[in-house]
Length: 292
Image 1: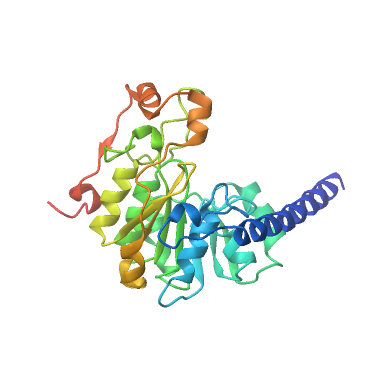
Image 2 (image 1 turned 60 degrees about the vertical axis):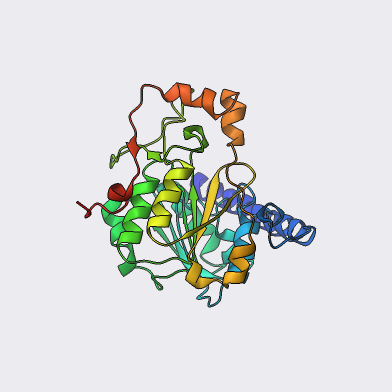
């Protein structure tokens, strides 16, 4: 009985948050002064943690051909991720994956009746399961792929691209504490989980230049990062009009605002906390392991 009451109250609060997110996103979207060449003007947040909703919203509207399908790995409970706006406001179909069983169940409770086109799976994604993702999705070239798992992000995305999947838009979390110049990522460890302790929580993921190295190897173009320095955006140039992409003035790097708040200083100061940690250099061989 107590669990039922708790579930009811959570769902009630969840629906209130969904209504708030839709209202906030609509208000922020309509108040933008859009410059189609300036990604910083595209941003707004409905469900997204930062301005990702706005950037994605502009990009999907510029697609030459859209299948209105997304895949998000690290979707949490759906209330704060990068594709809930597409799911609820734009009525996209898609696949949400998260490794937390509680978050996944809450996501089902809240969103299953709001959009029957969204499938929700609970699993911890690794290289092997990422490589098999193409057999589970409705479209191997989804309009949007978003990955935010605070760990093996590089290896998961690499496996997806190597499998032959070709998302039109890729949204990936980068670790700004690794700086704007080095192409590096953490070594692969299947059971990796970020440690949420001061001095430890900076050790995760991939640098921005590391992502650029990977995506350029697969023929993608870099678009921008959002203002709070969390996510980077890459696109398949074949999916967009060339005159649009050629005019975009991308933002080259932003520092993560939450890192700055917790650790203070610039990324150089933050990187000092990682001086004893091991990293892998991202080059063509790491992007395509079959290359000798």
